[in-house]
Length: 116
Length: 115
Image (cartoon, rainbow over all chains, first blue to last red; front, side, top):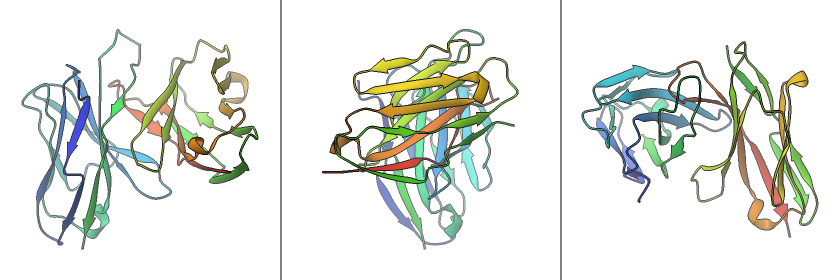
């Protein structure tokens, strides 16, 4: 198993450009999530999905779109990049678990994004 | 609302010393989960432990141990006989309210082990 993979590893954008960060997992996990990590702020949830065709917003969703057409893939789209979106982006996946039971999220290696 | 506080921003220890990383949390949930992740200099996030709020037993895994105390809302992490490879940022996290296994993270503690 490759686990959770993310591409690209590093990207530089100009303000106003759009791009898609790719995330894929081969563990048949139903749940997938996107976080961003900024210095001194830990990780914050952007969007998440509990299955194909189902997405929802997290703590910091503005400026980002997601879709989930397959179980394996969960791309994150930046519509019009801004310097405030300079960050490290992590994708995570997990099994749904039984009712009331929280399963462990497994993280991809991250994408470092610089917006000039 | 969920809150996780890691008051120690940075810690430096000399190799072979013991070190404890503090984590204090706030939640109104009666059932919740706590996690620790390690982020080495290479940047990936490595899962270390998951603990259910009903299980207050301390856990030991090799040189790592965790002390969960509901009375003080703390879930502290101790590394015994630290090694240079332990140098990393350590994050404590709490299950959030989305019901989708998402986590609310603390701001992390950077541990530097000096040889």
